[in-house]
Image (cartoon, one colour):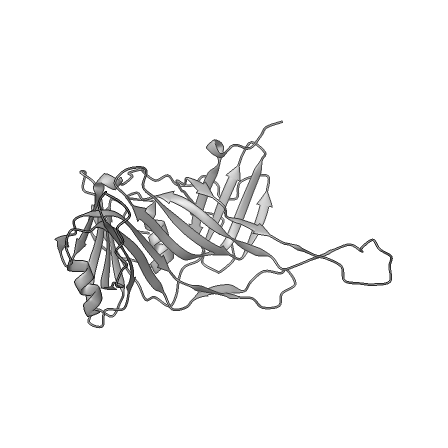
Length: 312
């Protein structure tokens, strides 16, 4: 009997034309590192009395379908997750193409994601997937990955794939050494690590249905937050925090072959940090920043992805 192994797992993704209805074609094979996406339906203990000490059979509760998918930050496939987070991009160019994603959209696309384990076989199709949160961590070394948190409507399990033959993407990963952080257009020095997290803060529409599923997941007030850990070498960030003013932060990755990912937070506010001395080594300061809408631009952040993909 075959045993399921993560090394043989497959993931395919397609955009839905109707929420919760899995497309019959148009799937793309997605690279991923790990996935906790799944559906669960807990049991409710019987509360009836008068039938002895042993309980009666439990009842099924509502279905919850969600989870995290860890994906690489790459030049092609990451555009799907950016579209899920921000909506359709504005694409310019004629190869390479520049895809510009903007925050603030009231309408987000839904998608169907199939995770297959062919050796069992088990192919789980998660329809009505909407992206709740997307974030990653910048460091000096290691593999660069992002976490996409999804809310799905439900799960349908089959013994064969419903994704057909998905299209392939070219794997062109960004690395930590490709990364740079700029403040007001100038490279920000002494940065040890940083985190970026964009949240749509989805509102699950939990109506009464005979199948226990949700009716949808609507975006509410978005949030763009993160942290910057720096070696304490000057008071630039501390002075900004004390003054309560905003700055522009740019998180960018560039490959030698020309692919680029630029994430711009237009109006970032810094808290006044506690600066502690923990021993004889260097002193570090941590800033848990928050972004807000830029009144002139009318949005909180802009993401540019430059690659050879004509459209998402």
